[in-house]
Amino acid sequence: MERCTKAIIYKENLKFNIEQIKKYVKTDVKICIAVKADSYGHNAVLTSKLAEELGIDFVAVATVEEGAELRQNGIKTDILLLSLCTPEEMPSLFEYNITPLVFSKEYIKLISDIADAFYSPATCIKTDKCDSRFPVHLAVDTGMGRIGCYPDEAGIQAKMIDSSKHLKLGGMTTHFAVSDSLKEDNKKYTAQQYDEFTKAVNNVCDMGLEPGIRSCSASAALLNDERMHFDMVRPGIITYGYYPDEITEKYLSSIGKKIEIKPVLSFETKVVAIRRIAKGKSVSYGRTWQAQNDTDIAVLPVGYADGLLRRFSPGLQVTINGKNYPVIGRICMDQCMVDIGKDNKDVKLWDRVVIFGPKECGALNTADDLAKIGDTISYEVLTSLSKRVKREIK
Image 1 (cartoon, rainbow, N blue to C red):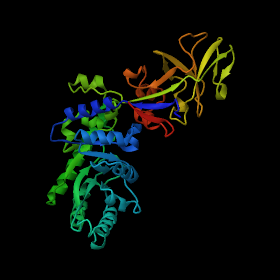
Image 2: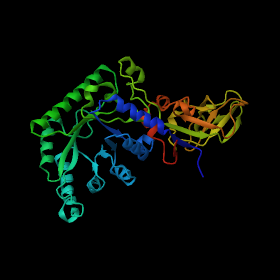
Image 3: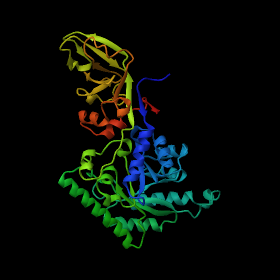
Image 4: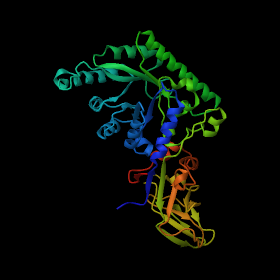
C-alpha cells in the first residue's frame, strides 16, 4: 500500500547540482556537503552515497545519530558533526568515526578522556589503533553567537588539543550570520567575521601548530566570495537546488558568478474528492473563507502534519494538470481544500497535484514560492516535510 501524498527525489538533479558545485570551486578546495536533517528532507543516505561516488571529501550532520545512520548504511566518506553532543553520545563519535567540533577547555577534556578510554590497550588491542589520534575541528565564534571559542582563545584551545594523547587538530571552522544578505552593513559584518576567523587561524599558527582544514563558507559565501573558500566549503541548500536568500541566480549572473542548479524534490498528492460549495458557504476551520459564488472545491489528503504549514494559506497555489489553483480556508492537520471553479472539466477525481518541485515534474511552484507566502525560507519548507511523507527516488 502506498500513500498518494509523497515526495519524489530526482536523483539526476541532485547529481547535477553536486557536479556544478565541484566545477564552481578550485580543484584544491575540499567540499563538505550538508546532509543534516535527512539532507534537508532529501534522503541523507542517497545524498551521501552519491557524494561518495562523485568524490566529495566530507558530509556534514547535526547529530551523532545522523552520522551513525550513515555509517550503518555503508557510507565511508568523512563525516563532520556540526553541532555539539553530550558525554553520553561521545563514545559513538569514535565507534562510527565521526569528526566532532570542539570549542572549550571543558569540552575538549571530555572528548580527550573518552578518546583515551576508547584507545586504551584493553579496548583497542584488536584493532591495533592504540596510538591513533582522532581528528577534531575547532569551532570559532566570530559573530554568530552560537558555539565556538573566541578568536583570541583559539591558540590555547589548539594547544590543548595537540597535548592530548589521542586527539589532533583536524581543522578550524566558523559560521557566518548574514553572508546571504546584500545589505551593506551585513556585508561589512561578514567581512569582519572573515577577518576574525583569519586572526584565530593566525593565532594557532603563531603557537607553532597546523590549523588543519580551514572552513567558513556555507552556500552563500561559497557563491559570493571565492576568497572565503579557504581549504573547504560547506554547501547546503544549493545542493538541493535553491539559492540562499539574496544570493540569487540573477545577482550571481550580474557579477559574473552564475551557477545553474535544479530543485531536487517534488511534493505531490492527489485529488480525493470534488464537492460543490454554494455561494455564502464557508470552508475549513475558523470560517476564514466564504464562497462568493457557487463553486467546486477539490479536497487534497495533505496538511500541516505532512509539512504543508498552516500559514501557507491564504496565498498558496497548487498545480493540477498544468494550471495553478488556490488553496482556500485554513490548512488542516491532514487535509486542505482547493477552489477549482464551478464545473471545471480540467480537474477530475484522482488527478495528480504538485505542490512544489522542479519544472520537469510539471510544477509551477518552487519551495521558494511557498517560503515567500509563509514569510520563511526554503530551508524550513523542505525540512518541514514529515516522516509520513514517503520519499520516492526517481
